[in-house]
Length: 217
Image 1 (tube, rainbow, N blue to C red):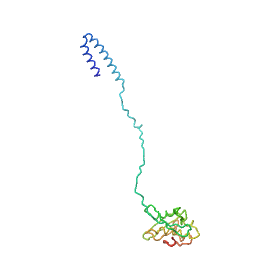
Image 2 (cartoon, rainbow, N blue to C red):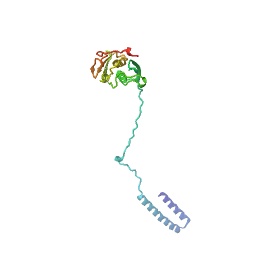
Image 3 (spheres, helix red, strand yellow):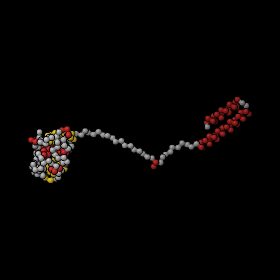
Image 4 (cartoon, rainbow, N blue to C red):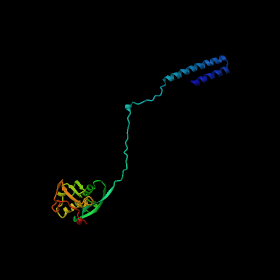
């Protein structure tokens, strides 16, 4: 609008100066009519123009999508300890001492026996002296007496081979493995929570047994 008014006044000055008053008046009347038409058109356009409005969505229509990426954390490395395990030789005549590294935990006696029950490495050429399927049900270490009470499932007795010295190998595979710890000097056997005097009639288990180095190669 300011530009139009400036143009209008400038035109009036020029016309009054260059032409006569009569002619300038006619020209001025025409310009005035054109100006009024421009103003009317601008007002109509302003009324019809829709101002830009910021549309705010309904909060109920807003959906927040969350993504979750698991974060990997690096903890302290697991400490390991080397333990001795006793398995039978291929001919089942003697025990052979082997070593294996296992995680260091609070109950090392339990962890060691459970590792013994897993059997030897296939490439070692050794065989398990304890019957397959035997499970460790309970273990109780009494440091003040340096005694360990171990409770096994029925497989230790029921699945034990009757020939040769299988019973001796099984008993001392367990006893020698446990007696490597400073807190254990003797082992007492139980089956399903019950005290046993023997497994197959050859070894006396009425009392606790100690490690037997003579049966080890």
